[in-house]
Length: 113
Length: 113
Image (tube, rainbow over all chains, first blue to last red):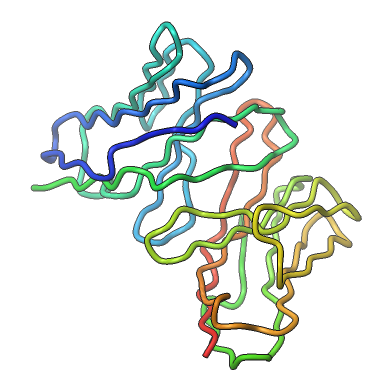
């Protein structure tokens, strides 16, 4: 699985968009980009994933560059409850069969009033 | 539908004691796994299972045993606890064909004295 690089911490004002970057310059053609978050030592929570197209769901948007070497997770209107550690994970996905998630250090996002 | 449950929530052991951390899921997922998270670190994979009767080692398997006799349960056994096993343990399951999402339990906080 490709290695990812994320900034260790970021701040965001409540109500503003939070843009969390991730570099994955060694990503392979069959590897997906996944984002999880962990709120205050709870179990990690799935946010979104994508292969090469931009994706959006009820939680967030994922923007993947055309060369797929980097991506950005966007929380459109951050709230205090979005304060968490965000993990960007690159992996081959065998849908329905699970697989190892390699967690790096992640980005600690602090949403401030 | 409880999702992924873990028991106990907290446990204190003395060096050399043994114990079993329980993980149960009611989502009929084939894939289950155990991670540990040390303070300030990302999660690391201990063991995983792709179905009943099948288990394999992850990144940090030493000191832990697992078995998978049913789809629902995936217990993690510490045979002789050591202070280095003080950590938070998370169980995860996966079986979503469309997203390959992994669902994490709430965690067990283990302290070995």
